Image 1: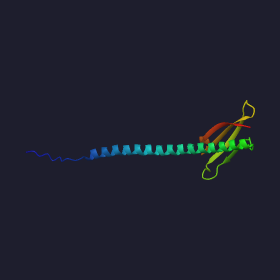
Image 2: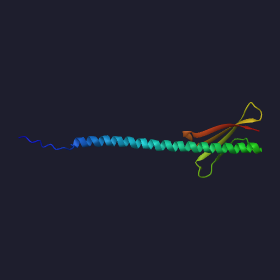
Image 3: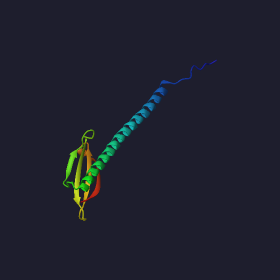
Length: 125
């Protein structure tokens, strides 16, 4: 009588293949998580830049209404906690008398990467 000594279980080759598959899946999950974190940080910077641009535009509109608007090119840096953001304001004439186009740009990071948010509006003198 012949007895089969093979017992139920995994061979070393099967275990190694399973580990390779699991390792590949984990690397893909880590890469995806890293991309999600990077995308979230970028969206957060854009959202903050947009909020700061709207704030600066509101200041300019209030100064325009009160007659205290200085329409020369302006620039500066925000106070903490937004000190990594810079702002620039540009005024352009329009064909309509008494109306100026205003562009507020919020810049951050490396200037070579051109990270910025800009909004345009019109101010009446």
